[in-house]
Structure formats: structure tokens, C-alpha cells
Amino acid sequence: MFDLSGKVAIVTGGSRGIGRAIGEALATQGAHVVLGYASGEAAAHGAVAAIVEAGGKAEAAHLDVSNAPATEQSIAEIGKRLGRLDILVANAGISLDGLLLRLPEDDFDRVLAVNLKGAVSSARAAVKIMMRAKTGRVVFISSVVGEMGNAGQTAYSASKAALLGVAKSIAREYASRNITVNAVTPGFIDTDMTASLSEAQKAGISSAVPLGRTGTAREVAAAVVYLASDEAAYVTGHALRVNGGMYM
Image 1 (cartoon, one colour):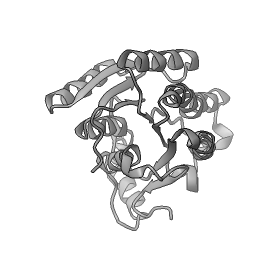
Image 2 (cartoon, rainbow, N blue to C red; image 1 turned 180 degrees about the vertical axis):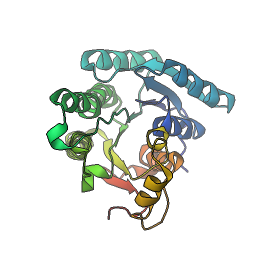
Image 3 (tube, rainbow, N blue to C red; image 1 turned 90 degrees about the vertical axis):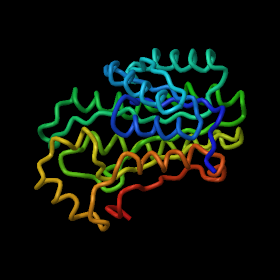
Image 4 (spheres, rainbow, N blue to C red; image 1 turned 90 degrees about the horizontal axis):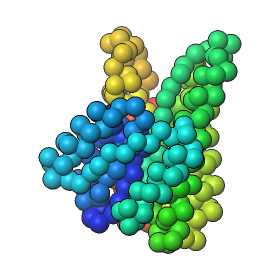
């Protein structure tokens, strides 16, 4: 089950955290994984080394998704060099938080450029390749705050909410080509991005989660593996929540 042998997957933002866990999980199931990175080159190569040491197939590629033309060109070249592209996981994202009245316009634009436009550009390039093969899987990594909102995260929430609409629209456009498009909406996940929070802050957030704990990057990765697999061939336009019941 969930056999991805012979498939090629690109994971944007794949050098650390959820992206790295997704890359490792896809490789464990047999996929040749390309971990995209914008600035964390050393971390990306470290992730590749870990996958290869575990018996998987992986490589790193510079993919700054805020640069749409460069991203589309890079993904096209990867597809051509490897002969196919079966799976795209649009995971790259940033968070520049601040209350609305204190949110600089440049920060708002930057978040949308990476989280939303970057994901769309990546999908555009991937779908061009997948259309020729008449099969493919696109998975957007959204967020629970894209569904429920969060004070101080107007820009981040907007970008992640928009991905849900994007996923549904692209799903409708390319279903006839056997390309499925879905989203995963993680809740409070224990990653580098949350490591700076105090124990009191973490406890406060966990108290709002019915399961009473933070999630792990591996739990998010497991959801992505399912959506990328043949077993999810009849699932498209769906948002799969991995949030411990934080939002239902």
C-alpha cells in the first residue's frame, strides 16, 4: 500500500521541518525525491544525505518560489532531466506576523509572493508535465489558520486560505487528465518554527486541541503520502485536516 516506486516527487521548502519529513516519507515509499530550497542549501543536502543513507533516492535543487519564472524553469528542467514528474508538494512558506494595523505592506506582499504565488507557480510548472503523462498528484500545504484564522496572522491566514480555493479550482481544471489536487491543513505542529515558543505558550495552544498535544511533522507527512499515492486516486479538491481536532 502507498507504493511510490519509480515516481518522481518535488517538495518545495524541503530542507527542514514539515518539508523534510514529507521528503523522507515519500522516499521511504520508493519515490525519487527532489528537495527544493531557497536559502538552506546545507540543510537540504543534509536531508538528502539522510534519505540516501536510509536507502532512498533524493537530490537537492535551488527553488526560490518567490521568483516565479525561475521556479517554473527549474521545475521544467527537473522534469526533463528525470523524465517525469508524478508528485508536487507545494510546501514552501514563510510567516511574517503582526496585528493588522502594524502589518507593513511589504511584509504582506512577501508572504503572498511565497506562500500563494509561489505555490501557484510551482503547480503551473508541474501540471504542464503531468498533463503530457495524463496523471499526477499536486498537494498544497495549507494551515489550520487558513480555515479558522488567528490574531496577528492576517497575511499568513490569507495566503493559506487562498490555497484551499486554488486547490479546488485546479482540481476541477485537470481532473480529466487524471491529475488530482488536494491540500493538507496542519494544526499546531512541533517544528523549528514553533521551537521559539515558551512552554507556557505551547501548553496554552495544546489546551485548545482536543487531542491535547502538538502534532508531529511525520503525521503531516503521512497524510501527504496518502494523497500522493494510487490509493487516493478518487480524492481530489479535498482539504485533509491534520490538527488534532483544533478545527472541525
